[in-house]
Image (cartoon, rainbow, N blue to C red; front, side, top):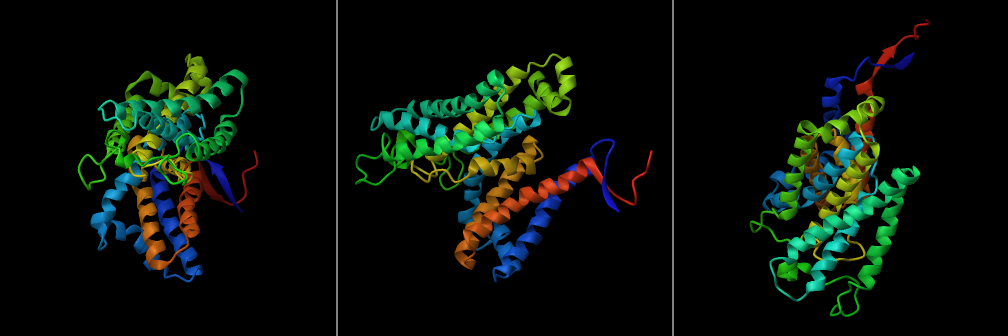
Length: 360
């Protein structure tokens, strides 16, 4: 009989090996999926993981790794703080949208003025918007004991309706000939999140993501709040005896993750995306959950996982174009990462045992 036996303590070796095994298993299962669709599995996997880095047009795709990876890392860092403490913010996509609306709204309110302070105000507004949206499930949890998973997730759909409303109403471009969507912020210098080095993909969102990684590392390893976060996640009863204030921790973790998600939305709408539109959100808030767990909720791991997920985004687009792979297949391929990560992660806390269980 095959059974799972709980380990006396989590296996560090399995914890480190799990992300690598998950990526390998995803490649194998993804190859089988692509083969079932009538495509060459080796060519499909090579296109996804090789072409963006070393292919003929890699000079164009490499900067896109920063563009795609920055919002994923920024959001995932915020989510990881709450996940470590057992606080589950699943609504980062909504906070991302609201942050973009707040940031773009401030920028467009100043149009067509040219001033250095417009973009900093947009940054503040974007972070504030995400923070406010995250405070809704935070307040409801600490005041009424509601489930933050359900509340934060449902608020994503509310945020999407706000996005549609703003695209068709208040933020709609008056010179857009009736088409939905705001003015293009890429054409408004004071509100444009331009590349700091032309053609490099390095914009302020990338800088913010790197700062967030450093901040999270220092917080978790050198600050009492980080200790409280880790203690609450690993030993809730011990955290209560240690005097950890659960209300304060919930507000901090949800607020921080919402702020970072809002910043990601603001940097995206003022940079690569360029405008508020009905289809502005592309699922970064949900994909960041995969990134957070693939990176083992560790800031450096999240940085690497964000790069890997960005690679699948770009490689997936190339595969769709060159191999005519359907976009749904690429999304399934990305989702496999989380599935296999969670499956292999089981072996961190349990070992496979053969034979009948011992009877006490």
